[in-house]
Amino acid sequence: MNWEPWTGCYKISDGCTNCYFYGPHAKRFGQNTIQKTDQFNWPVRKNAKGEYNIKGNKILPTCFATDFFLPEADEWREEAWSFIRERQDIEFLILTKRIDRFPVSLPADWGDGYGNVNLGCTVETQELADYRLPLFLSYPIKRRFIACAPLLEAIDLAPYLHGAEHVTVGGETGRDARECNYDWVLAIREQCVKANVTFWFKNTGSLFRRGGAVERVNPFKQSGLAKELGIDLLHGKRLF
Ligand code: SF4
Image (cartoon, rainbow, N blue to C red; front, side, top):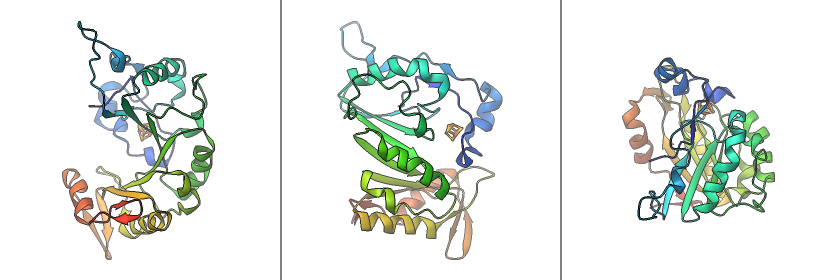
């Protein structure tokens, strides 16, 4: 289960082109409507016995159907941070394409970061990596990861890996998906080997180029195929 304190989003970069917000979801809900949800204070809600509804000791993906750093959410984010601060027993996993908005609405007691926030910066191209990652590394964040998703070209992450706990890579999914080239994936993996960083090939995407051929991969098989390739790394070392 994810925590979605608000919903809605709109394009910010190339990787957003085929986001599901512009498909059936958009037709049904309106793609640019940013709204608070009834889950807003879910992490701190308690039952009649005074216990939290969400049990602790878990990873809670946060804002996976929107972006935590949308400007439209600036006035809500401070309260959202206070919920996160209260639940030190939960690891909040936040992924963003708007890392340059990180300092906006930051809580006064943030210091060098909350230990229960694992923040992921998405980069889809080299240009975006070179813009977003220096900012990402300059902010006070205790736990960082990099998500190359959808991976749209070869990216050299080497200058930025010293600050990341792990890297995830994934291709684009959907009818109009752009190709994910396995050579690009392997090159990023090699950079992670050299930097002793954990690497996870999350999914192949719908159009997967490997060994000179392009394969169309069913959305339900993309993660399985990525796993079968057996290239994931733990701290730069093979997992098996
Ligand atoms: S930032 Fe994420 S959720 Fe928002 S439009 Fe882009 S891909 Fe979709």
